[in-house]
Image (cartoon, rainbow, N blue to C red; front, side, top):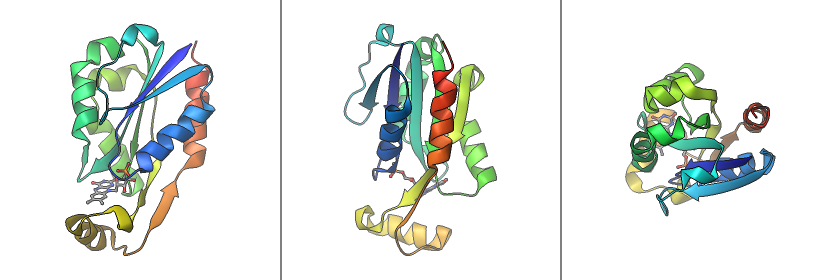
Length: 160
Ligand SMILES: Cc1cc2nc3c(=O)[nH]c(=O)nc-3n(C[C@H](O)[C@H](O)[C@H](O)COP(=O)(O)O)c2cc1C
C-alpha cells in the first residue's frame, strides 16, 4: 500500500501537518510539495491525501489546480482531504466543503481540519495586518490538532 500526500504550504504549518501525518500512516508514504513538484505518477499509489492551508476562504492555488486537473486519477484511489485554518469550527467545515472538487468530496473516506498556526516572523505586512484585524491575534499561535491527525491516519490505515 503506497500513499501520496500532495500538499502546499505558505508558512510551514501544513508542511508540519503533512510530516506528522506521514509518520502515522502505514506502508510506504511519499510527500509531494506542490509548490516544488506537480508531476506525479498516479500508478504508484493506492491512496491519495490532499492538504492545503486556507487563506481568505480559499485553499492554495497549487492544490486547487492539482485537485481539479487530476480529479479523474485521484478519484480512482482511496482519498483523504484536509485543510489547515484558524477560523472557528463551523467556518472550517464550510471551507473544507467548498474548496475541494465535489467528486473528491464524495469519494473521500476521511476529511478533516488539522488546525493551524500564526507565525508572525514569516508573515508580510499585509498578512500581519489581516491577522491582527480579523483574528485579533498579535503574537505567534500554534494550534495543530494532533489528535485529529492521528484519527485521520487511523481511518486511512483501515482502508485496504
Ligand atoms: C492573511 C491570512 C489569511 C487567513 N485566512 C484564513 C481563512 O480564511 N480561513 C482560515 O481558516 N484560516 C485563515 N488563515 C489562517 C491560516 O490558514 C493558518 O495560519 C494556516 O496554519 C497557515 O498554514 P501554512 O503555514 O501552511 O501556510 C489566514 C492566515 C493569514 C495570515
